[in-house]
Image (cartoon, rainbow, N blue to C red; front, top):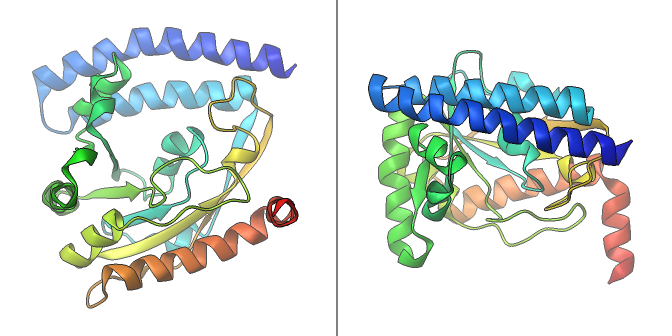
Length: 249
């Protein structure tokens, strides 16, 4: 059944993207403003339908009351492609989300073009410290216009039970803008592993932590506070994975 479910989802996602992406791109170019985001949500909802009804993977959000009503920086665990879709449902109804991503993704046919139409924050990783300034310039504008900014501080997808050094980008943005920060933990990698064709039906737990104000904190203090909460929460959500990782070492 996993093979059938996963195959059906790949077909549905490909066909839906071929149909929806041109509409999003053309609509964004013609209508401007936030239409690129609205039309991008149209694509996302179609993919989410496939995730829920074909793959059988459903979200369970815990701590939604912790999400501020005003735009903020969300620092989240990153395990799979699943959270790039469903984390956007963590913000208040009618709110907008953008991700910080490498600019190379914007050149990917259809999906990348759609991301560009949605005003994602794109950075040149080869630019070194200048990349942080790119995040602040674009992030400040997005936050000012009511967009929640989602950052994966580990920078790449990490298998359940493991962690990587938290990079400074999201914390740098939050401290320079002086906004709130929300840590998020989840176990999407349990059902949708990185670069895996086969997905497993089940429920993904998304735990939203208490918001805290980055104003007056250093980037290191923001990262330390977010990482401490996220990694402690991950051990509650996926205790067996951390036990297995500890045994392996």
